[in-house]
Amino acid sequence: MAKTRTQYVCQNCGSAQMKWAGRCPDCGEWNTLVETVVAEPSKSAARAALVPTSAAQPLPAIASDGFARIPLPLPELSRVLGGGIVPGSVVLVGGDPGIGKSTLLLQMASFLARDGKPILYVSGEESAQQVKLRADRLGVADASLYVLAEVSLEQVLAQMEHLHPRLTIVDSIQSVYTEELTGAAGSVGQVRECASQLLRFAKSNNSPVFLVGHVTKTGAIAGPRVLEHIVDTVLYLEGERFQSYRLLRSVKNRFGSTNEVGVFEMGEGGLREVLNPSEAFLAERLPNAAGSAIAVTLEGTRPLLVEIQALSSTTSFAISRRTANGVDFNRLLLLVAVLSKRLGLRLSDQDIFVNVVGGLKVSEPAADLAVAIAIASSFKNVPVMADLAIVGEIGLSGELRAVGQLAKRLNEAAKLGFKRCLVPRGAARQAQGPDGLGLVGARSLDEALEAALVR
Image (cartoon, rainbow, N blue to C red):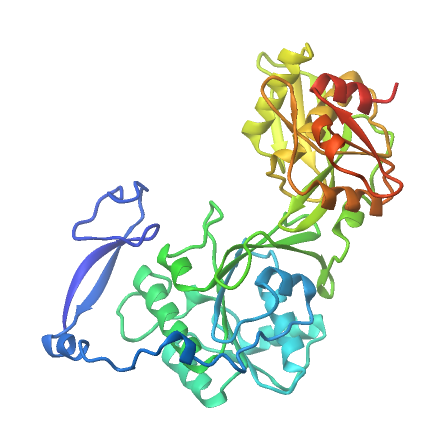
């Protein structure tokens, strides 16, 4: 009988400690050490591990024929994955509760099951009847889509060996447990071991596996950090629960770029792809409203036009408030300081609220100029020109700095009917806008404000 011992494993970094402590000595996080019982391998098992079970192969001798990606009829999901599903890959999908993870994966499974090859959907949190109710709502009724309501990993692997599915979905990895360990489902050891065994099955059978992961209150995937290191791809489904738009973002991808983003809209029939996100985000815009500016941002290789709204109001408290929704709060404080110092706007007694329409999050500095102009427009109560798109980064001296991939941004602005685009002067001299789009160059924030506001 194998010997067992107790150790304390950090849920954040995965490090093991012999004694419990309130704070992990490796990563510094509090209350992350969880008691775990592990089995020590015997000496005979250790000696057997020294015998190679597979031979190393020269790189040119490894055949790659027939190892093409599995195509997806969902262009938005396919873009984020890097062009399709890689055989034998393990993909981890995280997101807030109710954001649409199970809905997206069930729709994907339905599309792949139409070829007649078996798709296995393992539900550890819902019964088969509950999954059927969601499938009826989404219009999914494929005979090749198999549903298994099971939490035992051994039973799941046995079903996968029997069925040989083209794709397996496990919803969720925190609900599955293996009988080889004594910990409860969702514990550090259980999550790590279950993910490792599913990874070995996927690699040995070239059968991709999608795992649904719970998230903590901070938005990170629950469980040990090593879970994200085990899998090949980590996707996050983001968005406000009270907004209809969802963004699928890749934070790790061994087979593609991590800069791509997919845009979906949640409806009664499930998630629908938004093929032209810029047009959707600007559909309800009021062109002549003060405090509204159009920023041309870049999400991966895709340019997006988003509406940035700002509201400046005289405060009734001793200390004015700053509220940022969709933009970085520290970046907002920096732009307010530049407006106050370089342009002389008296914003110290103003409550300032900035919002990105549609529940999007804009993090790149190319939206600085649009945010600053929206704040100044609201403060002066003068609208921004309706046919003007804005691109530019703002320095602490009030100067405007060029941004990357300006040609893509200009083409997207012209496609949506904008007649002019406000850009840094240096970029305006070098770049050439598409037909019908004029470039307005400005060297400083002061010049940009003069060119953007309606006279």
